[in-house]
Length: 355
Image (cartoon, rainbow, N blue to C red; front, side, top):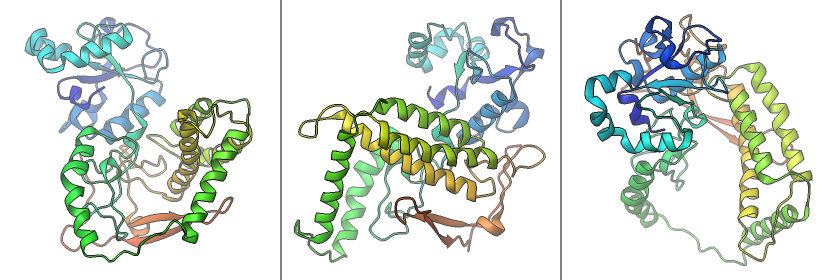
């Protein structure tokens, strides 16, 4: 559901694990408003990565609600008492209607059940005011860059940032780059072009010729479950090592047993999806490898071994104050990490606090 709902909704779970009472039967003293108690200065309005991580933690502690026990309540009872049903409806009516259509529950009467989303765990790539990364000529648009959402998101593409970057920024900034750069003309007869074309054609042929027993969506879902379970809001060394065993095995299963329907001579969405899942499998492994390597907590990256006594993220600026990129070295070969130190001349590093 929309982040705007946290403006007036209160997030809570039962104080005791195993409490199966309906929310209207749980009195105030048995409700755990964990964001309000833990972050009194910000409460329900803490940044998304903090809210999501804490939701994951209370669910892991057995306090989650719903059939999966992986949800928390978003309650509008106080807002309705304060603004009335009409006032709440004026602000959130379309979202409430959408929720009721999906769940068959009336959020005006029953608290919403919301889930932390995995894309709140990642940070975006650094860009300058022209949206260019540290690699000259490599521009980063939408939520792939850090500019609007910082550590909160990388795995989604919000309308606001997509529109602002795509319509209003990049058409002007990339033109300036091209105007000041002499680029060589690329010919289709160029050896690099021919090599890329050959690799693409071979990949398409291979995907269509496997004719295995598992669908693309089935393998995609399994990969999502691995990432959610071991590389989600809170990560630890054992879980990350487990993921690094499961992901290569799943990738091998994909290339040996996937079934891609259709042909290469026509519009084929199943083939397109298969190519993307193949890429996801590669990206998932390097993302997990980086999470294992980074033995600290910072931003949306939370390592359970690196936290304060109060459960807050604990950075290690001495060893991890850098921007890193993993370089592909070939199939079956461990990628190589390149680092660029972060230096702060005017604004110095501090640890954020929402107390």
